[in-house]
Image 1 (tube, rainbow, N blue to C red):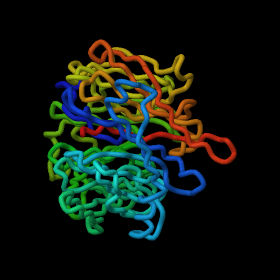
Image 2 (image 1 turned 45 degrees about the vertical axis):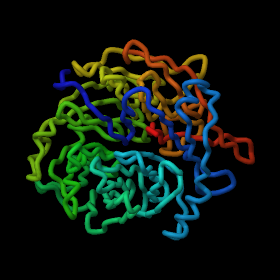
Image 3 (image 1 turned 90 degrees about the vertical axis):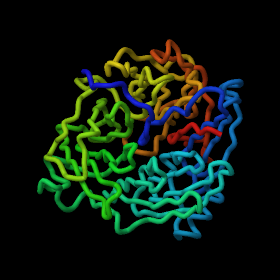
Length: 428
C-alpha cells in the first residue's frame, strides 16, 4: 500500500532501528552490547567497540575494544543508586554522538557515557525496568520506557555539563487513569497491556510515539510537565510489541512485532502523518495510520530492527524469527523483496538490531545467542551470537552476510551465554 512520500532522512531507534551514520569517507566505529552478565557476577554485561576501518579491512577477524560493564559502570551505579545494573539492552547516541545512553532492562538503570573515552558519567535508576532510553533530537531530554513499571519517564540532559536528572513531575502513568477521550488508558479490550517498548521522538522533539506490549499506541507531548497523551490508538488499529521506527517525508513510521509468549509472530509497518498532530488531543484512532506492509496471515515473522540503505532508497526490516531481511522500496512504500542471512556462516543467525556504515556499503546487525535474555519464551534464539557484517548490494535492494565477528561469554559450566542486542554506528 502507498504511504506517501519517501521514507526518511533519519532512523530513530529503538527502538530497534538505527540511523545511517552519514556520508562516506568518515571514520566510524560500531558499538554492540552483550546483555549477558559479566562472568561470575549477577550483573554487568559487556560493551564491544569495533573500529570501522578494521571491520572493512579484516571483516570478522576485527578485534574490538572490550569494556566490562561489571567494572567502572557497576561501581558508579552502586555509588549513585545503591544497586547494580543488570542486562544492558538498548544503546543510543545523542544527536552529536558525544554521549552514549545505555538502558538496563532488568534493573531499571540508565547510564550516560562519554562516547570518546567510554567512561561512565552518570547512572540513574528509574525503577522496575528501563527497556529503552531515547535521546531527543534537540538534546534536551531522554525519554525512558519503564516497561514493567508501565511508566513513561523523562530525564533532563545537559551534555555540555554532564548533568542528567530524572524529572519526577514529568512522569506519565500508562496503566492508570483515562485518555483524553475518557477511555481507560489500560483497558482489557482497547489496550490490555500498556508496558511501553520503544518510544520514537519526532524531529521537533515534541511528540513521542509510544508503542505498547499488548497493542495500541499513545502519542505523547513529551515536553509537557507532566507528559500528556494527545492521540490514542487501540490494539486493532496498531498491533503490539513495536520496536523500530523512523521519520521521513512528514510521516512517522512505526512497526509492530512478535517475540512474546502471547504473540510470537508479528510483522507490520504503519505510517502516521506528523502534520496532523498537535497539542490539542484528537479523537481515538485519529489521525488514522496507513498500513505500509503486513506479513501476518500465518507467516512466521517477527519484525524488529530496521535501517535505511544508502540514499534512503530501501528500508531493511529484520525478521528475527525468519532469519531474513525484508526490503521495502521507500519511494513507493512497498515490499520489493527479501534475502536470507541463514547459510554457510550460520544456520540460525536471529538478526535483531541494524545500522549502516557512513559509506552505505556495509550494514551491521546484532545476532542473538542460544539463551536470549530479553523475553521468555522468545523467537530470538540464535546459534551464532555476534556482530553480523552484511555487504549491501544493488543499491540496497539486497545484501549478503559477509562475516560474523563472534562474541562469547562462556560460564564455568561451559555454556555460552552471550546474547548481543543493542547496536549503533558512531561517527568519530
